[in-house]
Image 1 (tube, rainbow, N blue to C red):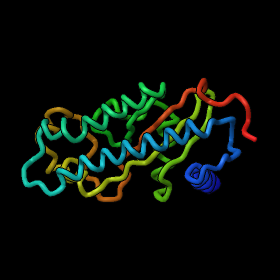
Image 2 (tube, helix red, strand yellow; image 1 turned 30 degrees about the vertical axis):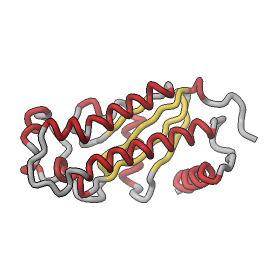
Image 3 (cartoon, helix red, strand yellow; image 1 turned 180 degrees about the vertical axis):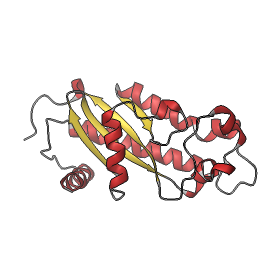
Image 4 (cartoon, rainbow, N blue to C red; image 1 turned 90 degrees about the vertical axis):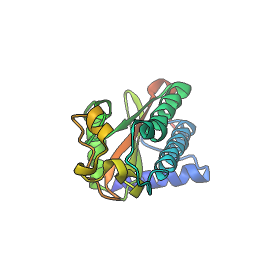
Length: 191
């Protein structure tokens, strides 16, 4: 609960331009930049996915290239532009590259699953600032992530080990994980 309150205060403070004394010496501008970049990324995902919500034709590989691929491309661009690591991570992944890579990611997914009211949180460690932001299932997601027997043929062919189906609207689909390296963190505590 303490973490939830800290996250809420941190995000409120960033929105209002406050400088908050937080866990470690953190550059609030870097965290604010990460929050903004990931919110825009999620808006892109939501906007592109909404285009397939009411279609009557089965999604194809072309649909994937128009809807899902641009999100991954934008995540890579954000990472490259800022010198960050940006990943999409899911416990029930379709693309094996999106499975949790370490205990930090597993713990973050568990935290988001346990606390559905938490939109995002951050942690610091010797690597830097980890920013975790939930991805929830929306109605448009169900076209490809709904009932297992309705998963499009191209998904079955491309991802034979697929785990990303049988979701319901509102379920935790996964998260964005941004790592801002320690070198980008402030070297002195905030006043």
